[in-house]
Length: 271
Ligand code: SF4
Image 1 (cartoon, protein in one colour):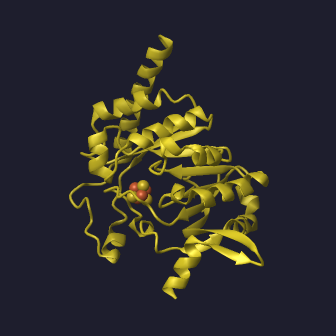
Image 2 (image 1 turned 60 degrees about the horizontal axis):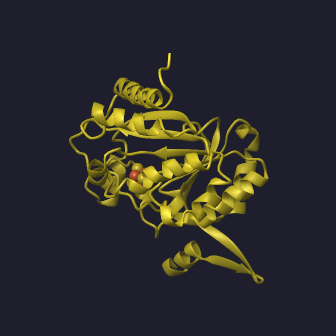
Image 3 (image 1 turned 120 degrees about the horizontal axis):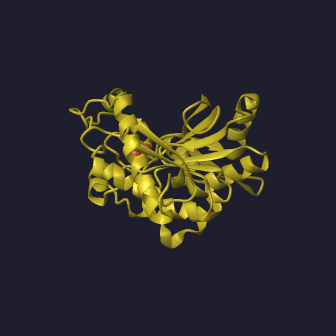
């Protein structure tokens, strides 16, 4: 049973000689209001190579969990409530949706053919600058990217996520180069991602991305604790308190200051 499911999950089903691509999906949310503009059909992809210490979805990490779905089955589920999504659309998040790039590209291609707004919520970790053609094809059918920048400093990023931020920052530049609207997301974790100099540096970096349209600073919360307990994984941040909305707003103001500094350097004085 396990092996059969696994084969289906990562392969293609054969129907009378044709091939149907399948994605490995954790879950869907029919009426998402915080993952892009408007009311959205949110698809959580299974599998993530990152290990962010503040992650509240550790149940999306493993690639051998989840269940198979085709692009058509997901679009069929979208169509059932299509009237609610008029100002919204589809958001793919995770886990890490770019881990399943061919399936994600097929899903967005079919969605765009139906006039559906497509939004990609990603950490950018799967981007490989030296093999960027697949990402270019994906971005050609993506209306909005919400890119999480976990930390602007390489050493701190490695400590927080287990990975370099090099390709992620290059992906940010690539998204702008491809002309795709971009929202940046940053999780504010007290003592880990809230240093003023880092926030300002983050602002200076994203101020150089000409398709930047939005900035979300999300306060860290520990609501994922029970999931860690259920999975038997020690909670990575037992001593860090949740951040408040006020702390997130103050951090956002510092990032905005960094953006202005960058714009001032690029374009001279701004009133
Ligand atoms: S990228 Fe997202 S899903 Fe993956 S570990 Fe980080 S917070 Fe969790």
